[in-house]
Length: 255
Image (cartoon, rainbow, N blue to C red; front, side, top):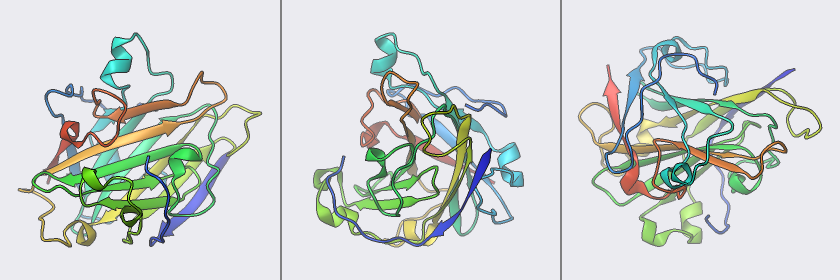
């Protein structure tokens, strides 16, 4: 069965230590030595955030496949459960849509603002203004839960203050299968994130055409059917360390 999960809005607080379903045409991702360019499509109509990825902009937005990190590929490993990412924007939000193959969908975290990467499957969005040190780490889980962290710089990574962040992040998700049931086999899950532009520009940066922003969309995939949890991302990094923001892709805002 397909399980629909409700929209989540607003952010709370927490303290803790830090840490494919192909549809449209895919664009090859550049390697970590040459930052990839990921196109975000403009939508004049705000998205209905329900995790279904059926808004008109998703039908035309460029699709990017997830990859393993370069060091894993060099070791002969292959991605076992793939996924895709699409980006969109309007005058108020930056949107990310994810579509993941997943044989065992699990999300044990029942609240927002948790370190969900320790609790099950997850899509992570990292956003960073190119000329600043600070950046965001944003989550959506198959359960429709969310987290938002903000780091003044990587040198402050792990401090409790980085997790005491509030914003207007909204998320939604849909599961094709049975959530948190290891005894069956699932198909996958889809998710959407909507980050308010007002939160991204609160310190004076521009966001949109003419601005310079870096991006990474990353995944944690836990499954009974995998030999170990699988980490994948778009664009590919040199290694599966999601805070390597020097290797993030660049956003191209398409109007």
